[in-house]
Image 1 (spheres, rainbow, N blue to C red):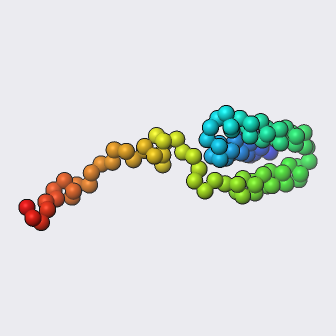
Image 2 (image 1 turned 90 degrees about the vertical axis):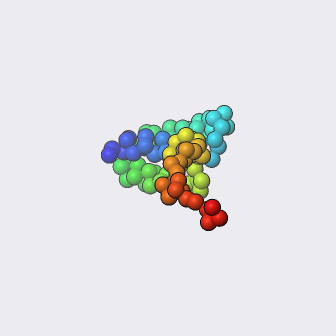
Length: 100
């Protein structure tokens, strides 16, 4: 993976992480602009060592600020509505109470 692709992937992950912390888009937009300005400030770095160091530093920051309970769309796997209609276990269908 080239350093450009790595930076773009990292930028996208930063935006998604910011969205985990502020779910509302109108609040997230300001954070997205700030993240963009940070990436734009280092855009013209050509030294490969410095590029790797910046990518590693950003990876560490992502790990540090990782949300303990990331936002998940309600209908996505892991969302609140995803297991809404679970199949009933077969043994429950043939259950009879002890008093019957």
